Length: 391
Image (cartoon, rainbow, N blue to C red; front, side, top):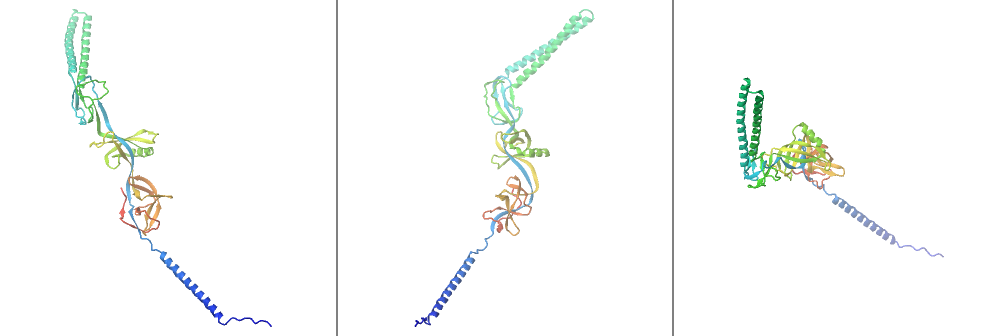
């Protein structure tokens, strides 16, 4: 007889059901906890939008922009004259102070004139002697002619006396030339300034014997009114400069070596007739009135030449121009006060501003400072709104 199949107690099945329900409830609680925790994290990570970025900006306006080219140069005296004696003799007096301004014709020094005065007196006396001889010869000629008419004198003697008169006249002409030469030599004993200017260091002291052939000058006079500036520009400016000269006088400004202080205002005088192939530059020369002697010969200066004036163009501060992998651009503030990077085409530069040939139009606001953290569509606020261009 088979064994009977064992039966579970009636209480076992409800116990397992309770366990399953407990596990499901725990899973539900954990799932709800995870859901709310994640939802809270999402809300915590959703930060508020950043505050507008403060920037400096200007509003573009049409303006007239002078276009300059700068070159380094040096000041030249309009004339430099070494003062030499034109005769030999003892230097008697020096009548100038070193470094003083002298006028043209002003007496600078004197050489002992006694020998030259004696030579002039001798030439004058010789002429007086020949004048007397001419008078006597003319009288003799008149007598010979009168006697020849009466056949008391031969024509040969008359001709000889005429020749004597002509020789005496020629001698007098030589005497006049000798007097002029002696007078000139005497005048040379007074040394005068050939030009107005500033005289330099005296190089010969009074009491020395000086000669016309001496290599060392008595002093050097430099004429600084007007003064000149010789400077160079890259050869690429040659055509532009020549075109500017055809339009009329070209203005040139002289600045100090630091290019900060304007010294004088002048006019372009010439462009050299050859390009230096070694440096690819062209030499130019400008003249300045220099009435205040602010330009000193030998001084290095910066020359700024006005090439043209661009009228009615948009020009922006150089600080607004940015460069990146895709070229040159600026940050434009849109009507919604958002930043927008925009590509631009640069024109010539004039000091601390640059002409924009394409990409901007009048009335647009561009950022000039505050680029840190600036991004496209970033909200911005302008700290100190400005209008126009920087000069």
